[in-house]
Length: 130
Image (cartoon, rainbow, N blue to C red; front, side, top):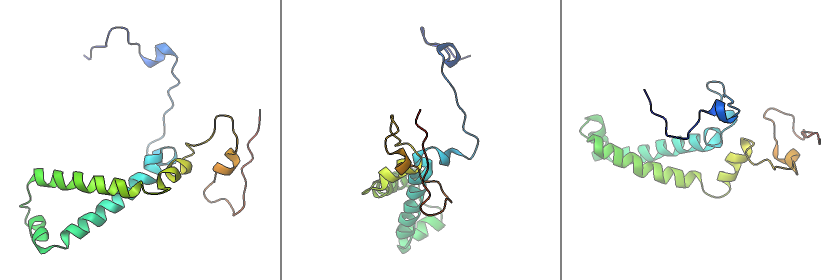
C-alpha cells in the first residue's frame, strides 16, 4: 500500500473539480498534443533519415549492432534538436492558441482567439458577456 505524506489530503477532500478528458481526445485541449508533439515527431523522423543516409550508420541500424546506449544518446540529441526547431519563431504561441490556452481571464479579444476548425471563412465566435 502507498503511504501518504502527513498533512496531504486526497483531491476529494480539498474540493478539487477533477475533469477527465476522453481517451484519444487530449489533442483537443493540450498544446503539446495539439501541435508541438506532432512537429517534434516529424523532425525526429527527418533527423533519423538524415542519419541513415550515411552508409555506415545504415549498416549499424540494419545489422542491429548499434548499442542501446548509443541509440539513447542519438535519440536524446535528436529530440533536443527537434524541440528547438519546433519552438522557433511564432510556432510556440500558435500551439497554445490552437488549443485555446491563451484565452484572457476577462474575455477581452477572446472572439479573435477562438477559431473553430471547419467553420466557414470569416465566421466569428460570439462570446456572451455576463
